[in-house]
Length: 172
Image (cartoon, rainbow, N blue to C red; front, side, top):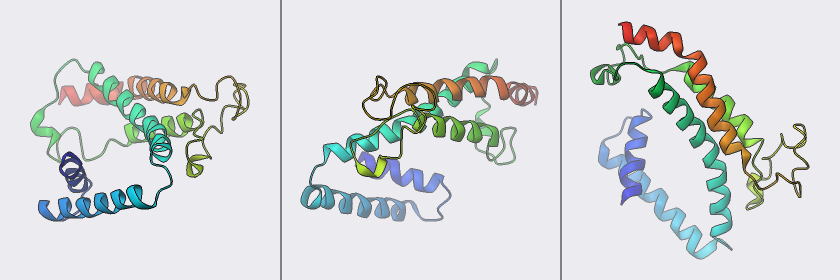
């Protein structure tokens, strides 16, 4: 139920032009199909799930870094009304923050190794070039440094590059 509620809202937030019940219905069908696959067809559930969590942890850490740096950089509270207005002081989309999050995610994925599922075997591409050992069997292979690095890069990037924008928003 929580998944259908939150994912249905996410579909609407992403701009899908559907009634609320239809978005929840689409999500419900996807969850049923996923459950059928996991229960009756997947050879193992926990291994692909771990791979999914490791992969998802990096962009989530980057998003948290951007959000917390933005929150801590402000001297005033957000203007609630302007958060919901496309023409408000915050605008529709904060491209610098999105760019910071994407860059931090790409770098972070290069520093996590995911042997849980073959689909995620492309990760860890920066361990060797950064001198952290080989991608597999190295001293940093399973440290998942990419989660921490993504968080720190995103927070630092947001703190540095958003300072002027935040001051303009607070002055408006």
